[in-house]
Length: 457
Image (cartoon, rainbow, N blue to C red; front, side, top):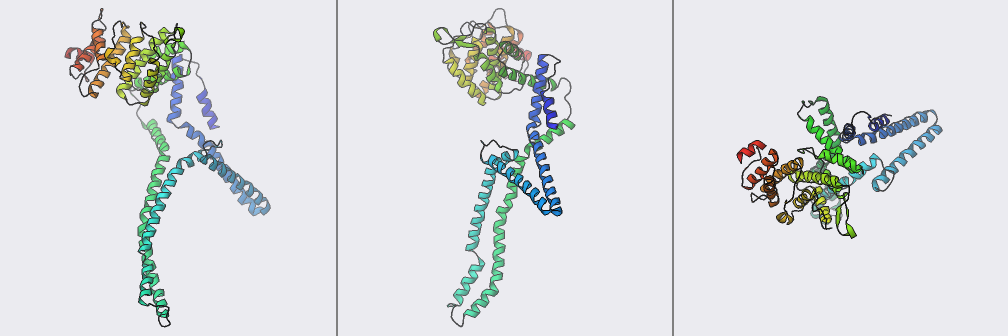
């Protein structure tokens, strides 16, 4: 009943508030399910019922056995059959992952099986080697050999009785010495076993320890002060909502409004790297086969969505290139971009051309960097501010990565092109462009604000 209550609470839909607020509420619930290990707790509830049923069967069998052996035997047989059946499905689920009779115990056994085998194999090998070494140095064997050599030939009539007498008197002492040495040799591998069990148990109970830390932080942790940490948490929550909506919805208007909101989030703080792939997928959904199936072009009616998705792709990919350039998501998107670009995509003259090609060139590090021109790039003030802000961070990152050689020419050309525009771009864009030039000249502008950068340059 607790499980049903929890699930009903999660599935409940709040009809009040805007779409964004309802999406944030849904994402908050999902994040809570992951953070509080809801699936593990739900799997523990049936285990409690099964344990209670086993205790009831054992107690009833014990009680009825004293009242009537026949009735007690029937109940004991039914309880034993249930236990045997449960152990069978437990073993079947642990042996075969395709077995439909999976239980939490099966998962635990499948996880513990290779570790237990390695621990037993290593312990057994150490014990066998230690036993062999102990047998070679056995005091009992040496005592027998010494007496055989001393009373040789011991089977003669006058020597057999003294031989057996000395053997009987000396064997207990030799056996005690062998037992002591064997215990000293075997105590090390046996003492290592609890350490392995402790490490194994720490891995098994790590989620419970993490859960305890979370509970402690929620009960005793200090709440964020207004304006500090709260906005960042809401931004992270919004970014997860964006990723979920882009991934699950097929409505172009939902994509347009969602990605339009993403384009206003500046700067990006922390997001799931799969958001880069989601933005790229949104752009790919805007292209289709051209005339006579020659190349691909922007589908009519999706020009605005293509522009916004290309800008979001450039924004997220640039941020990830700076924060985590070795991300597997970037490698996957890089391979997919190469496939799309090899299909002779015709984007010339479209507003998404420059941002998409620039993102692709930065991702793939191809030679198009050297020949790419911003030329007729006439973006809006907001788009230009996003591109300039990201290119400053990329310029600093590339300059440090290449050991202070030069800023990539593609980024420097953007700065020169933006400064040559008439009318002039916004002040923040001018500051970012001058920062790019300053980085290329070897100036350190990493710890300066926009105004300070302008004055410095």
